[in-house]
Length: 317
Image (tube, rainbow, N blue to C red; front, top):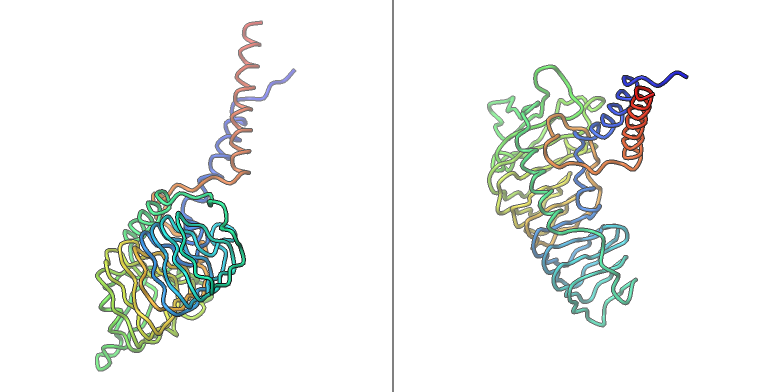
């Protein structure tokens, strides 16, 4: 009887391993935080505004007169490792905290509190911090240029050498971005889908238009900021600032938010950052293989073992 050769067996194994590695370049910020609208590495203090998705804090959550959606780690509105203090608002989903102080004038869809979620604050906080650091090392593929010397605050986003790319990376200071009062773009939206801005320094943004970013999957990565403030501005993208306390008011953020801390009166719209392949991102966080990948890998290992046994038995005979 013919036996399977070692080469096809190893080929199947390598294919299975390659399937797991294929996701290595995927940046999935929303997935890292369990699809929460807002994840904070410390406390969250919310003003009188609405949050479309769930919020998660490795610390206390406090506030009043605000409404919170759901969707964090399943159907949670609020997850807190500390105390959850809340009044005069409503939660669309469940809630979990180490301790609670919830006033009677609240609208809770789940009472009593939900069971503890399947997540680790330490792991999640570490992963988002590593992710920010990894993104910060990406080389710029595009540029933000002043094309008219008489209009220094009019900046145009352009693709770099090699033309349009599916992901364009722009590296600049937070203060330089804040100085823009007329943001333009020559990017090819039929090719470019995701824009990543690596920003250094603290940020104080207000009264600016980001209309040129409409329709793109945008991430603002505040690499080393300890303070980020948004006032009177609509941030058309997601925000990753794991070392910064985010503050401000009178504005909104469109996407996923990861903050070192949150003390703001800003509306959050929960248009999650869409997972996307980003070249050079492989070393940031090791993804958990999909169940199908594990099955392929185990099948490959089993086949290699089977072939080895057959060859050994045949040799012994």
